[in-house]
Amino acid sequence: MIEARLHALLRGVPVPMLVADAQSRIIGANEPAEALLGPVPGGRPFVTVLRQPEVNAALDAVLAGRQDRARLSLTLGAAERRVFCEVTVTALDAPGLRGATVAIEDRSRDEETEQMRRDFVANVSHELRTPLTALMGFIETLRGPARNDPAARSRFLDIMEREAGRMNRLVADLLSLSRVEQDERRRPAQAVDLGGLLRGVVATLTPAAAAAGVRLELAGTGTTAAVPGDADQLVQVFHNLIENALKYGAGGSVVTVTLAHLAHEPVLRGPAWSVSVADRGEGIDPQHLPRLTERFYRVDTHRSREQGGTGLGLAIVKHIVNRHRGRLRIESTRGQGSRFTVILPEKIGRI
Image (tube, helix red, strand yellow):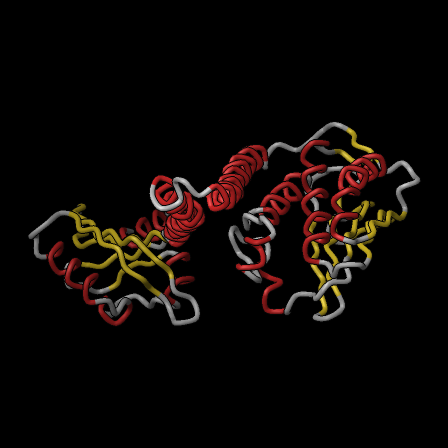
């Protein structure tokens, strides 16, 4: 009767849990525990099921009455699937049943989130430290050796202005990324005409294209392409993608922006519109493609900084596309150029 009640209770516990008797033998395990540790036959010594010295020492202490509860953090699992866990061993003293429960909570996501936060802070600190160090050095020089040197003063002020502009762009992109992440769960409801929006973005960037020796070509924008969207955010998406193509596409070539209708997009499970931005530049090595939308990830760090990049543009694009329940596809062949395609659903349903 007691064992039946114990198994019934264990079925209702959502986290992996094991129960050991006073002799440290397994008398119960729920399905999440077996999913994590494999089959757990009753009657086996606990030490043969979870071979972790810290956990076994905590279980011995609880069973001996030296403490009512023990909590520790450790990593469980095989090499291919390591899980960062918090293990809680609690004394069990009920009529006809003495022993301990061992609950295992998966904290891997919390640990990953904390690691992302640490990496983000480190990256931002690094990105700001470089221009700040340059500014401080030039200020010191202007106060000293270059105080009465007009040519050096003019040159240093130009560099300081460039570094200050770089910091300003970084702060603006950080704020933009924060706003986009806050809105990511709210689906846009207003109708946006992609054709008109793309024509406006291309018109804005045409002078920059001419300065870079690149010709901008539009295709398929003569039709009305209405999608649910946030116009300002979509302008930011296509501005970023086209600007990147102008920066990294080969000088004297063409950047093509193409709008096309998809009668049925399998992943989005319905009709959609695609916007592709293709350049004829150097292309990107395949190993870089999966990481391009990571914050601060750069294929060529030195060149990106020279071009004024902050390393956040594609991360912002990814979050905006996610908010619109769309897809971002990146294709590139070394020596032939790159194509960035944004696919947006014609109607936003349950995706």
